[in-house]
Image (cartoon, rainbow, N blue to C red; front, side, top):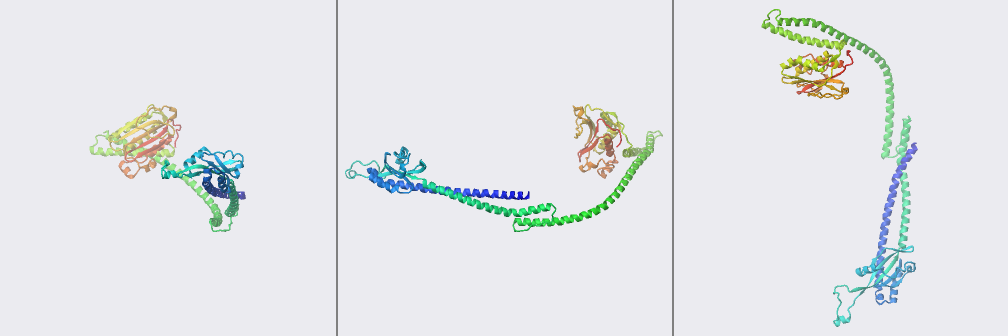
Length: 568
């Protein structure tokens, strides 16, 4: 397989070089043949026109007198020339006067030489210059014909000079010669064709010789190129079989030599790397044996530690739940007695004492809310809180929440409004816990919205997987009740807003954005955490969107029909 691949590569090298050699042979040989034939034909035409002009000049007197002896004498000087096939002389009306040459005896040629073509006669009468025509074939031989007009110069008679007889109409500067006949010379193309055939044959032989020589040189070059690659491929194959200790001899200093040197260095580096890896593998095996024992020990320790932490967390939640319950009883008593005193049950309360009792009542209420939050969170963590599922109207829950918080909003001159989707069906959920979530969210909105702001509570029916901001405008009923199986409630405010980096941690226990907000607005940081736990107990989700200085929107989504009434 390897030898076939290398041979194929060598063949590719040959097939890429030989066409270039062949193209060069054809190109330069064709150009040389074309230029040589063009030059030979040009010289041949010049020679034919010269012979025709010489014949016209030498036969002027014979044509003028129509003396056959003089015409034969003029023909003998031309017919002896090489390549002259036939010579013909015509009078001025195109009639043949005399002819000679060895080609006149060929059949088919005699009939075409008796008269001169009217077109050629008219052309030479006008131009008075030698001309040539295309080749004509007679049998298997080709000829190139040349024509020259035979001119005779007009001479003034004695009567015109001395006796005042009428003169010619030509002016003194005009040509006084006239055409009295035509000379026709036919040159045979046999020698030119034979010379061209010889050149073609010579070019073909030289091309074959050059092509064979170039192919041999290309083969030698391809062998010189592929031999180092062959050694490199065989060495790589042996290395792939596992014989890593390989080295290729470096025979040259060119790119192939550099490749061989680089390969040898790579093989040495690979050998060192494998030895190092083998040593490290041995060390890792020894280390793994020790680590497995240590990991088993640490795993058992971690399992026991996690079990203890879970038990401690459960005990903590149970303790907080019990302690919160124990704290609520005396606190409720304190609040009850404070309300009785303020109501005047025990008599009139002095003004200076009423203010202190009102402070006790306000701070007691705040402490009671904190204890309730801690108690709810502890119950959730301890798994003691259960949902009491039942049919409830989302519109009624929102209305009751707004009614309960309207006085707080009025103190800060806040606009508190609700937008509930028309036709929203009753939900199967724990109305008390949903109201608690709404109270936490609306209470936070009132707390963190400056005077003159607005708070809007919206509710709509949403499809499973859909998640988009609730609109502050009422929406039309959903056309397909089967496609919308969630209720999404949003509380939007125009408050101080929450930085983007804090949005992910606002639902953690005892978490507020910073301590300055705690000092300014108060709160324990448990409201959002409890709201998140209650929503998740309903198999829902809660999230928030906010921009600093523009306000926040808190969303929570619960199933239209909560399936589980259990705890987290």
